[in-house]
Image 1 (cartoon, rainbow, N blue to C red):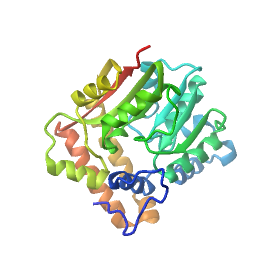
Image 2: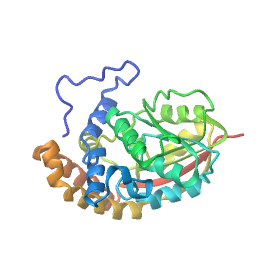
Image 3: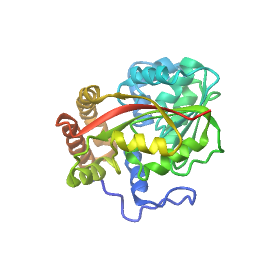
Image 4: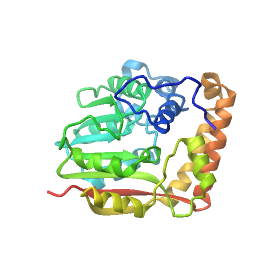
Length: 295
């Protein structure tokens, strides 16, 4: 179990008091992938900070399943154009946000719960020379700090599994979308047979909260007034990717131990092994959803 330190509190009154979300904040403060780790990887290639571009960063900063190929699929599904105003929910270190803006010319606002992720994303974006089109804010996806009808597109990748009260999440996204606005996101799902003990272990180890089914999302999207366009099953692809990602995290053992200690590495490794095992056994699945706000 990745325990929250004794006495840990979120001090910003605008931020969540739900301990499950506070635990997600803490989890990403100590994630193996960080802005520092990315900058170190770039430096190891012999590239100086002032030589960094988006083309350099995208080999290191896509901390989601499938790298830039997955962002390309999302971009094609959403039919992103330069005029789009995009909200990237749970934007992390900002890899997809930068890639979208670089490739299409759109403007992207990234929202993330964890201050260290927002700071890292901002630093990486500045290094890539994209601060004029991409910016990041710290905030709670269950209380979006944006006016109604602010965005033409909302995206997210494998992040909603961290968020409880998903009907509230989806309703909030619908509120900030403009008429004809699109919501395109991927998420971790279960097939309807997730045991209580496995659910507990997924929260303890990975901070996944109230993992949904495809049927759940279809209902929540409909209740929020969004029309379903398409659902793409990603189960086989993600099972392969997760096995590879687990190996990648293990390859960072020396760096992780130096930064966070052996006990932290061991806890994360065991939690990820359990997570990957649920994909291999068919308990967990994943999908890309595309829904649209009515005109």
